[in-house]
Amino acid sequence: MICPKCGSEYIKKDGSTYRKQQKYQCNSCKYQFTENSQNRIMSDKPKGKLIIQCDEMWSFVGNKDKKYWIWLALDMSTREIVSAHIGDRSQDGAQTLWDSLPPVYRQCAVCYTDFWEAYACVFPKKRHKAVGKKLGKTRYIERFNNTFR
Ligand SMILES: [Zn+2]
Image 1 (tube, rainbow, N blue to C red):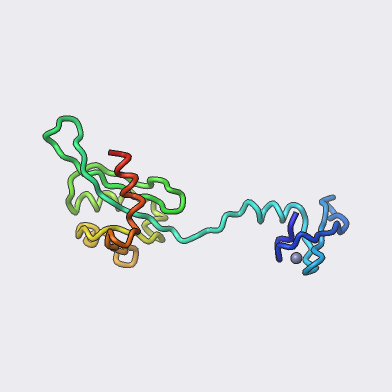
Image 2: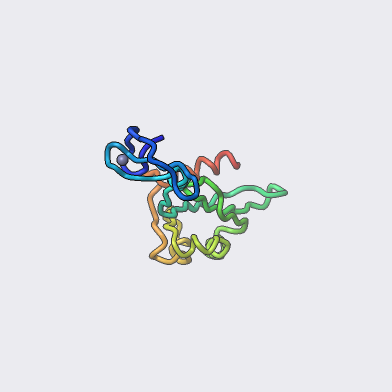
């Protein structure tokens, strides 16, 4: 058990609440808390900024004459694919990817892409950051693409 305020391990029991919950007090900073508040603090994940990476890759689907582009959007913190779309490598492809993003991402997320111009035409400037491949920001999704392929 540690103090939720200062992280000190010097905790003493400090009576109980009217709901019969054990109360504690920190010997270091005198902060009073219950077991419940400790649990809440432990299970609350810090909410970081939403960051997604978008990338497009080509693949043969069905017969080998037809090349398709697979558009992917990856949440950087959960490593989940939040949007995927198969089509051609046009502005329509980028538009469909954008449209199928969950609304919270369209409103809040910063979207990292490469310099493919379709993204810049479709993604709002405020939400969009084009980064060179050398910078490594799109490296993770490219690795995913390689395993996907
Ligand atoms: Zn403390």
